[in-house]
Image 1: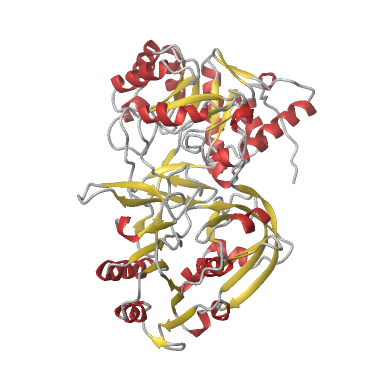
Image 2 (image 1 turned 120 degrees about the vertical axis):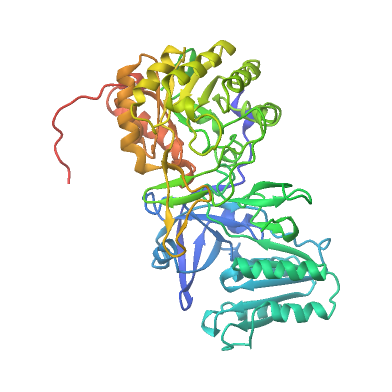
Length: 278
Length: 307
């Protein structure tokens, strides 16, 4: 019963930390650099942090954001988002020196090991791009030589971000837009399907974007019999698995009743597409 | 800082509320749980429960609605997998028990009576989010008394019914609990509410209604704690929107012996620890050494405005 026996290395961290830089990347898209060495060091690709502005009661709950990029040397990580809701509009106005309350790193990362695939295929819809830079960077940092491709669908050329960063990592990028202002005028499933028809050797898809897009990509993956991982976004409260508010339906068998409610924050945010019941 | 709930001693009056702290494992990755006065674990039933379909939560002004539906792995899994972990910590463990019938509550009490690592049972008769079952225990004082006495007969552990605010007169239920042999009462559970998305014209929650918690319910909870503390002589454990140490002190002054921190842990995982420090400092600053010295010490009279 002694607290000494229970003492363990804490694996999650929370405190108020400063923004070191705010970038306005395009349109309503912003990126904050945040000083939090334990998260810069420990965050795995696909993991997220919970962000809260202050102790105020409005908004009351923190919001989840993917870790976009890490700079271990300076103990900084970034979050990338579009300021559309009340919360993101509020933090978009914050600049270097202002503080955020951060909790992380959280959630199940992308499984990127060589046992998974020979080609890493990132499929982004809009701000679903946010988590992928950290994934591509981590592979290169580890000296992983496998090809990395990015299929990136966006509204228009003004809402496309970080392209040069992916190119610098040697990721082959194909961009499509809803209005054809950059790349082909198409949904991201069009170039993805074309690529899969070339019969690449053992690819795995890592997908993040709006629900209809993720559903469409999952169906393609099922038809083409390729591995497919989805990074899900839900409303969350605690972010660490206690409240069970971010329930997602996970298949446990073939029957209609063979499912359990998992937690997007713990069993996810990254889930095998075939496990998810839509 | 110690307080007593029947024969159980809490090292401080600050505990964490059922349904907001899981079974401790997640928060143990952030801080040492031995600092807490106690942990009220998530609602536990005889058999596993799947819970309600999503959407389950939605934030509202200074609060949140939830409709989790008592998702849990059942009491056997609690004893085998969750209790040993919790018992590594030097804090009191209370199991929130959930059933549809009196016999289920009594059976849960019998099963948990054998567990030395369990300090007490919080009888959940007030979850607003489950379709079948225990609504009558929350809305009829006689039924409350019956379920409390059935649990009382089945266990020597501390018995604490958790009362619903969704009634006309909560004091009747506090009295019924005392009559049934409860060692304490805890209150309040969440208030039933809903929210609608005007764009899609759909309810925000799949279950239509959910339980409202958070800072927005604090004045109601505080009033009910005050009323119940005036009515019964057993300890009252205050719950409802407690987010800061001043909130906690208000509940103690209103008559609470101990408090539970709930939704605040979602907003700030270290909220309970900050409340412990704040209450301790308040007592010291006022030349006091025990929370019980302020329990129920609220008075009437003018208070100067501070603008």
